[in-house]
Length: 188
Image 1 (cartoon, one colour):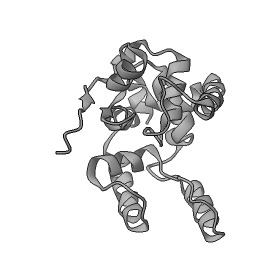
Image 2 (cartoon, rainbow, N blue to C red; image 1 turned 45 degrees about the vertical axis):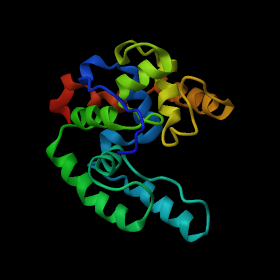
Image 3 (cartoon, one colour; image 1 turned 90 degrees about the horizontal axis):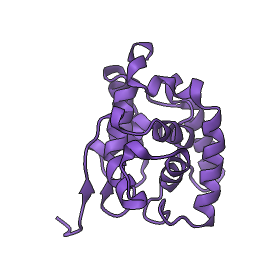
Image 4 (tube, rainbow, N blue to C red; image 1 turned 90 degrees about the vertical axis):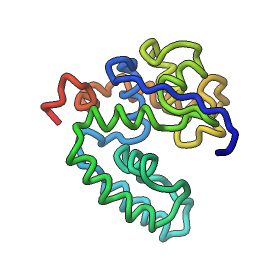
């Protein structure tokens, strides 16, 4: 144990504002409802950029991040990525999309020792995850994947700018996030 205080409380997807799944999908994995765990076009772009010596960009989908957060170690490596991919496929085959997102929202770290949507909403906005508005959901999504440097509750200019971009994407997100609702689990 590190002695670090941990804030965490699991909440069912029905008790999380509908705005947060939309914000996360638009920020983290826009093709979430259309792939089975891996977005190969994003992986190809990331590999091409790495080959050209550019800064490595993320190509991790929500299932890949969930696999990493549940089962693997932190940090970046091709070895871990090679393990994440089959795990993401397996998890995507076993769990409906809404369940994957529910797990992701409950285990992702939104700041030092702040795990899950409920803890993040209470820490950053002093309210439950069920009461998050679209702007707050966009700020939480903008804080990922750098929750130690980007703070949703006290965002800097870059985080605010990213949240505005996510918020605009959320306005047209309905067809792309339908799979994330528990009531549409049969549509998978």
